[in-house]
Amino acid sequence: MKSLEAFLDTILILLIFVYQPFCLSLVLDSITPNNTVKDGDVLLSGQKTFALGFFSPGKSRYRYVGIWYYKDPEKTAVWVANRDDPINETSGVLAIDSKGRLIIYAKDQNSPIWSANVSVPSEKSSSSFIAKLLDVGNLVLIKQDNSTVIWQSFDYPTNTYLPFMKLGLNRKSGLNRFISSWKSADDPGTGNCTYRIDSTGYPQMFAYKNRVPFWRAGSWTGQRWSGVPTMTNGFLDNTSYVNNQDEISVMYGISTDSNSVFSRFVIEESETVRQFTWQDQGHVLKLGMSQEECS
Image (cartoon, rainbow, N blue to C red):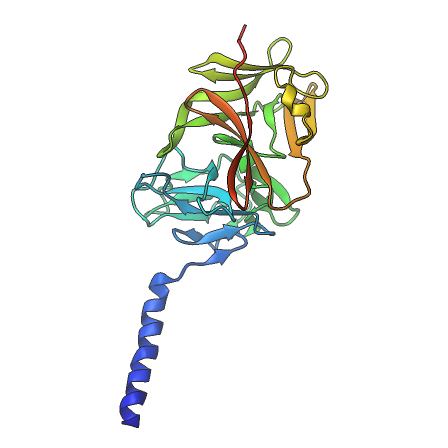
């Protein structure tokens, strides 16, 4: 009897070792050439504020790499890498390739589905780079020898404007940061609505649909956009507006010390710009921005 029990125990142990690799998901703190994010794995920011991984929005069967609030059970995406290039299976991998680029591939690493818009010096090996997710929701590709950020997701936002993210034009590089709507709740592909700074003449913040303005935040008064009086309601804080020969940009923070409260602006395909807060209890609408006549 004891020999039978020992035999069954041995079989059970073998089954655990055989099947465990097929259901194992990893929680990572960085991406390196030898440390990739596979579908099912999660990359966490240092304080576990944000998470990155593969997801399917809404009723979609396609897979995307996105960033969401780690504590949010709905995994509301605040950034999507391959928004216009979905994967139709679960074989996707986010990795640093042999050239030091951040890429997404499925079955063939030599044919990436998506890659970060960055040029890596040819003399640098892939081992010189590491990618991390910061606690502000920014995915950064870093040169390890001097900690220089050579690419960041904050430079290529999707439909969400987060605290400490800049919107606006870098006049030196020509990089223009703005947010654009999803096509639908099931499709994060680039939609028809955008929220951006018009740098011509006296700069103003506009929301556009098909390049036609439908909402105007107005010009900068020194404290807020003229068309958004609620910006001085005490919730927004540390708003920084820069307009010089190098750049025109705006960046905001939030006036709360709570680690359980987060803010985000979202441009929607329904011609709406909203600001939300997220708390442990769920999504709460903090500020719905009413439309202003565009002239």
